[in-house]
Image (cartoon, rainbow, N blue to C red; front, side, top):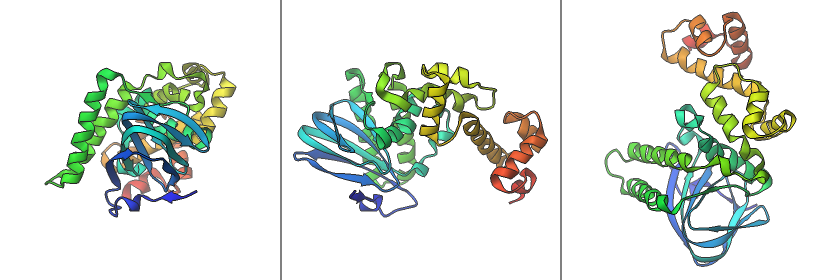
Length: 285
């Protein structure tokens, strides 16, 4: 696979983000991404999106995120104009924000990139015609801020990108995801976990949100996240605990309870096992 590194667009690793417009009169050769995501918005025309050897028709209004290590390109373009937004996952820690608790965000920014990498391009956001101009205006503002380099431009780029990510997540209608979308149908369950990870959630409840049997749900969840739901919930709880240990005056017992653990001793053992350090000592580092 020919890899197109982010360094081909920007050398600034402290701000790993790039946005551009692209007009394709000829086919775009197959390539992969080196540890960055690419958000694509089709602005006009149509083409064939080639993903890992499979061909999918795309047209104006289509929005999708291409994940790392996914080979893709474009064929048979006609009046085909797109906006490419490339960024490393760490550029904006969107998972730390409340938008991560929505199915649309989980579908577009978390599950679709994984799905396209593993099993093809079978689900994506289609902008309603009434929303196309609004999204294009956001893109124009983001593009102008990035390339204008006026005072405070980096702050504005982050803010404009967040605004765009929220708008697209709200527009993603996960209820219309087809049956062949596989892990993308996990979006409501993942959103529920992100919003309620401090609560007791059962596999049965989460599987029902995705309209899968528990067995299917567990298989697809592991495929999407690399772990089982309880492990995923534990990871989110401990990440929240790390933030509180560093940025609050709450006691370890209070943090344990806030993160979903009634037994602070059990919480401390989990934390020690995950990070190799006790919560109290972590706070001192």
